[in-house]
Length: 198
View: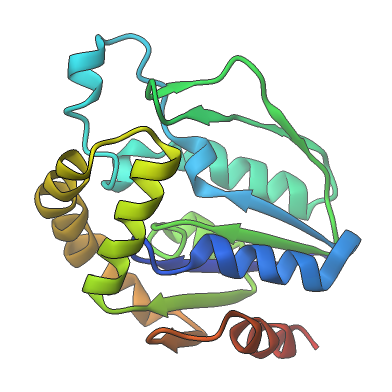
């Protein structure tokens, strides 16, 4: 039986780091799927319009395809997951082939918000981390990895990420089987989650 761990939480809460720690602990038994791969392609609009899209809203994600791909993986099938270019806000021409593994790790802002995704997740995890720490992490990531300026990251956080967190991400905490709070130790959190699979 293929089981799925779903990890949700606000921007900069540690979802990717925790997913990587779980994948490392499980080795070949695990495959990671990131909600961020499923951002809707924006190549049909100009770059200035792309910069105005609210990428922290659930509608920015192709949830239907993500749920379909996750269901296929849980049924033992291989999927070709889309890839997203955060510098141009478009889908990459190449896909990422993901094969089924005994444990699937799904991580993203809205993986507990969407009812179809929740139905496919066996262990639901929510990372509840203070807003100031999350903003600092987002600032470091987006300036270092996504070619953004500090001013644009802060503006987007205040105008989009924080309101979307309050409206969609934080309320999804109610669906979690495991809530991990504060500036947690990654290894301890991973051990707690893995105990749920036993």
